[in-house]
Length: 327
Ligand SMILES: Nc1ncnc2c1ncn2[C@@H]1O[C@H](COP(=O)(O)OP(=O)(O)OP(=O)(O)O)[C@@H](O)[C@H]1O
Ligand code: SF4
Ligand SMILES: [Mg+2]
Image 1 (cartoon, rainbow, N blue to C red):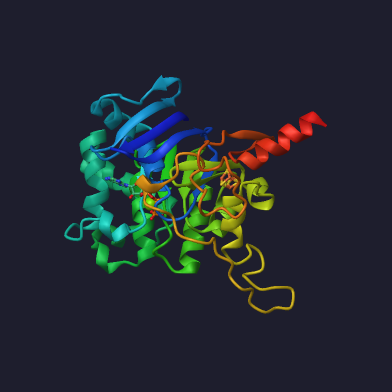
Image 2: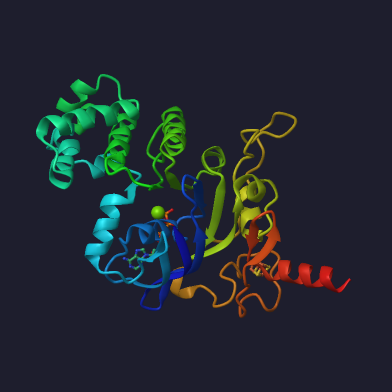
């Protein structure tokens, strides 16, 4: 799937600004950034699920076919065949009054025309694939009778039912205990590999994204400020926001402890994300950036290719490249 200059505006508030991304089949892309920076908006764009008040522009192509601006029935077909999404809170996505079996089997009967027994066999196979033990009894249970981790597995099974070529997982592990979260992340990676299914993994958790993805996009204020191979971007970040974000969390490998074993002081990015309509026209990180120069608030930095697939948009990087070219 290919996004080219995709924007989403709610009146004067631009929640996503000219996002460019390429999601290759079977690859895993992480989307990170602070709350409100547009991660979910980007995920919803891939699903054609932007709220009605949002105006979408730019190009969203799948296998060469333009989906941006397509009528709802085209998006519905896309959602039934190509893409699926899972969310943070599995309880909210399951009907508490319905047995799990009915929730999973009904769409198979309605959308795929399967008989009740074929739908049941399919549901059991999907449960097996996502590691739900004793799937027969699970089908008879209600959502509140199983654990949060098992509920998320049920939703993953539901999402897989249409054999999507892309799964968007929006904070799928935030509501889960650390150990359960790890197992869900590893399940998503395994499913992506065995099914050759692309995965867009949206998360606050940089360690989870480092574990699960090959590519990463870092967002701030509706902009993708840096992107590239995950190891490259997290190992050698170039955008001041990415550098701040990595500094703002305990080290990825040392669980936040320094060489002496003592807990490191948590560095945070100064200030908070302003409301969308108060963001500067130029670099949206200006006002919070410690390395800001005069042009930052007014001129928008353009994405710059830094080699090895890493791309970042910051005036300082432009200057460094211009300097390197002149010498
Ligand atoms: N229906 C809407 N109308 C107006 N603005 C909206 C609407 N939905 C979202 N926004 C705004 O769009 C911006 C991006 O929101 P989004 O939900 O994508 O953030 P996010 O990065 O997913 O945050 P979080 O980590 O908290 O989930 C936010 O500033 C939000 O207030
Ligand atoms: S463009 Fe300016 S404000 Fe934005 S990240 Fe770079 S130095 Fe900071
Ligand atoms: Mg979100």
